[in-house]
Length: 294
Ligand code: NAP
Image 1 (cartoon, rainbow, N blue to C red):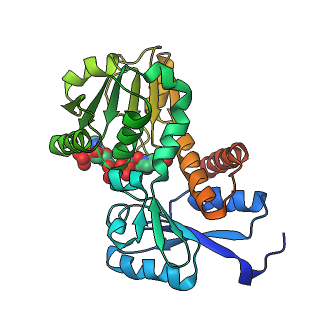
Image 2 (spheres, protein in one colour):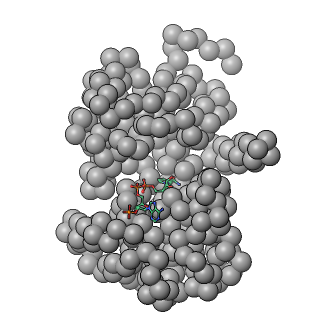
């Protein structure tokens, strides 16, 4: 494809740091495959420069950006409008520049919901267990309450008061009251994990380079009637997923959510559907070749 630089539309990622992101690989591959004249760049933006960076999106005519740590929450105050779900979750991971206004979305919700919709009937009216109570946990909890009717949601977190805050917040804004809060790593979470149909890790435990870490120190809570989901996507098959799979559980990799949230951002910017299957194949190949080179 011949690219006329003047017409190239710019998208990208703002965060700090941004150098380890897989998003440029995903979006640039999909742009090229569909022959779209777009580029995806990374912008390392310090918190004190966030407001200026957002003004720059309008001034430079950038089509839109993804937002990552540490700006997902703080960016909201500087946007002209925010989608209702991003407002409730309190985090924006995608911005669209409509010419004069910046509009924020949370496509993590779509990514999580789409990646487990085939398990909808299995999850309904059963207990769900969540490791972690941070930003991605809030997107997961929003998705579960609004789409999957879980019987109860157990949140296990290192910082108990953070988990309690999340439960109180969602019971107020969505009217869902069936939360239980537990401290991570205590023996009393064993029974809750065992009796849960869906178990979701929303902590970074097990992420590269600490790939042998687990949120629980035993495999005895996992069994074949469960779905175990790890939001960690590097490595795509985490130790938690391996352990659960060995006990017969269905497992879902964070790679699925990563691709689906990217696909939703892609659609918001270009109006086109991302070729997900091809992009996933490309991304997994890239990750395998990176691993071989090490
Ligand atoms: P966050 O807002 O910083 O929350 C992190 C959560 O993990 C908190 O609950 C924190 O507990 C807990 N945690 C962190 N380190 C821990 C440790 N060493 N031991 C026990 N608990 C620990 O982060 P986030 O945005 O939710 O992201 C969390 C993970 O999800 C990251 O690995 C991220 O890459 C992944 N993620 C994946 C996708 C995807 O598309 N697959 C999307 C979003 C996020 P405390 O409250 O006690 O500090």
